[in-house]
Image (cartoon, helix red, strand yellow):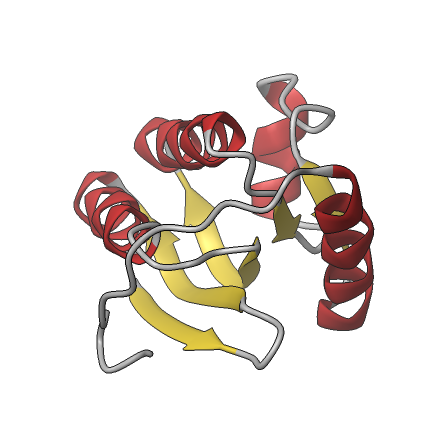
Length: 132
């Protein structure tokens, strides 16, 4: 799995994943999120459009990330297309657990709505993978 992180001007962090979500790559996702949350974070989007398979470790990583962000009052939107990842969320009955979008545009809209209803969280700024 490849993991790409970017941030827009509205403090929305976008994590784009490609390939398979397995034990190794799931740990990489969790570690990346833990580094990012040390910054001022208003919203997170995880894009799974290019993930072709996910196992229990991948599902567990998504749950861990969601739970961590929820405790910090930081909304998370997950972009999940129809396919194996959506099927895994449906089989595990976690589809309703996450805020799911079908596109980046929809995810940005949902993240903005959620951020208005959640209190903002500020912490000391620190660079992650070259991000401000």
